Image (cartoon, rainbow, N blue to C red; front, side, top):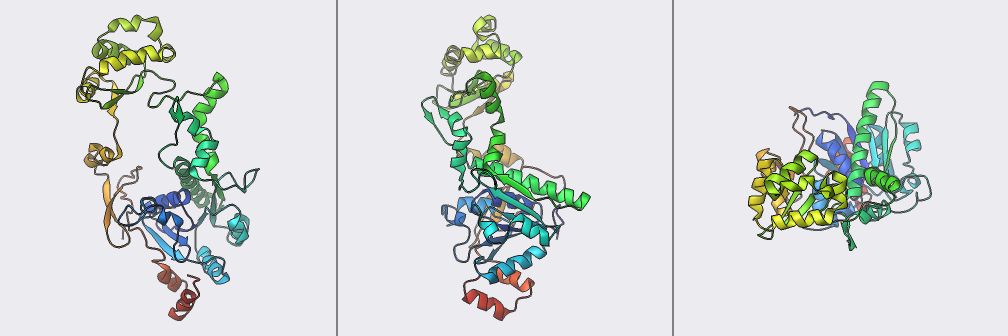
Length: 395
């Protein structure tokens, strides 16, 4: 068996939904053993978000490959005893339960690390475990609203949510990097530091640029659909065949090339309305009219070919189906197959960070409780004891 960077690291996770499962899946990609603790019966409620992937949730399939599933009723002392036995041999404990639930179960960081000084705990919460909103539930769109992200997304007439679970993903990424940092620190110093990440603070970090712009500019960036709030021309324009083409001009050299080679109007470089980046943003309506009129005269393919030829960044505006068939993903061999419960194989993308010579693990997505018996046996439970726990719905 190949040895991956996190081989030998055991992660126990009381996880649900998106944020914590995303963090632990990335640890599993690198070889960590991730034991996902789920409720007996239905398991993680994200399993039922949809049924589009051979009867399974697209969210769950994305987030839970290469893990082991153990079902435990943690309200039952026998279930908690099994969990504590697991934690005695674990390196990392991750949880994103409802506010206060882990502490009520005796699974707060202080309690766990007092007994196990080398255990790294990671708490993923909505708004932090302290402060005025510590007890509030937080879901992705709520956090998008609270950070102001929704107010930046959409058109002048209507706000819109970001089309992916961006707050969950941000929190999962920071939980992942925080755990890696804690593992490194423990290896170097011997000290295990608890990690805490909130969805709100993770997405707040990603709001840094519009926060600075608003605080120092007196108004927040406007909602402009596909247009960029602080750079022009930068956005999507409709070609003669009805397809949208996105182009971006980042500096004065590119602006001059666009005027001469694409717009056919080199005199615009001397137009005071468009002399600098801020000038072009200030006169966006006039500029957009010029670019839109030019795009309307050619088919999208012709536009993209010409923009590529003259060195202007551009792209077609893909839908998801086009993304799935993207030539870069195929040409760079980024797809692998992962098995889902029931045996069907589905395509999954390799993790984006390549470690030279280290292929990531891309093992199956587990069924609910698929590994329960094996894990309990590993902990020394006899077949009769396991049968008794199952009969009482503890597992």
